[in-house]
Image (cartoon, rainbow, N blue to C red; front, side):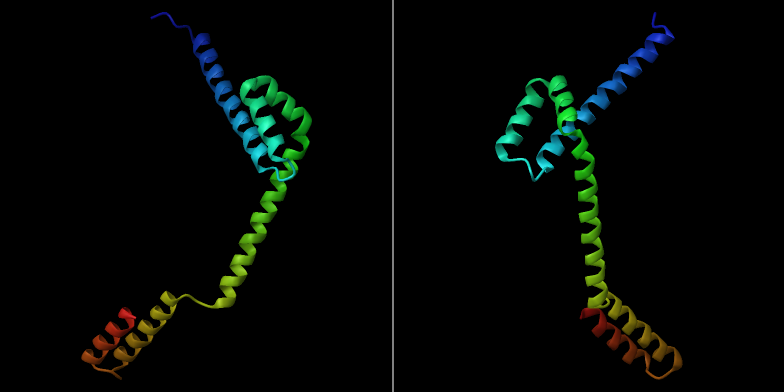
Length: 133
């Protein structure tokens, strides 16, 4: 069992570099398909270039189009944020969901029952009606 400590560190470094390489490769391929300005033929060409000659393809892509990768990421994040905000505003404008209304009705029934305004039988039947819809 002759495996010096430095060899262990080098093995871990190679492993992490390998993982980083695949992350970079997939990020570039994802950016190719995310770009709306790139035509179908352009996407096919870049994908073929990146898959056929991965190291050269990724580095050429980063040099040629790397600056716009960040802009596309920011634009996508802003679009997602805007979609989320509009969804929240729409949901707030529509009012509470039906589950919340049932909870309110059950709370009112429990209050009436606790004050003695309705009997146990009336409470159970009204509760069953609320829960069934």
